[in-house]
Image 1 (cartoon, rainbow over the protein chains, first blue to last red):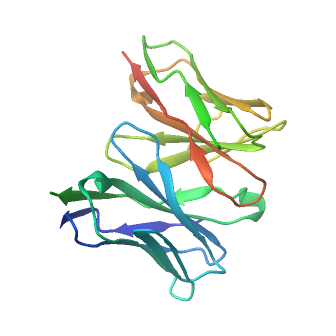
Image 2 (cartoon, rainbow over the protein chains, first blue to last red; image 1 turned 120 degrees about the horizontal axis):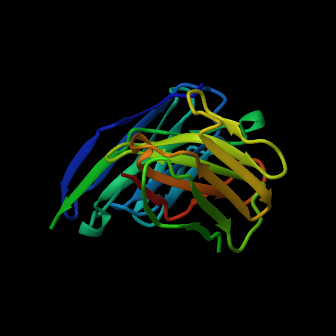
Length: 114
Length: 116
């Protein structure tokens, strides 16, 4: 099955700096890669996603890049703000008989210091 | 749009009790829903995939007789933790996908289950 590795496990930055979180996946059939933000005790919220036919996607301060050959994808947050502090999860999914089930990375605790 | 409602949000009960958790897609139809378990400071672990009108598909190591899943309609899936014990205490979250094939999964608010 799919295996997703996420790094770093914790990330501390100053307000205004950029933050980068990286993930690798093992299943070359995976073709959908979402990123979720989860605040303590709350639901994971989708912040951005990318499909395998695209190399990069951007939404305001958030961007995701995908390298299919190397089987890794990254989340980039620019101009970080204290409200960006949360746990971020990457995930990978493939279609077919797996019904698009997600395999999650271990999570990254992002702390943005004012 | 794409709102998933999960109830109850918190359950505290005695060991041996069975607990039912509901997951509803409020403004869309979901042929597939997913149930996850999340331990403190850990990632989401998929327990099972719930398919409308058919049996759920359980992940390896998840006891199907312990965690009963029913997906009787396109907007409702239920997870019943049967004869719950303290080790079943956890945060259970459901998700639903808006469309068939690949698409974003939207999560419910989760259920904090505490077994005394």
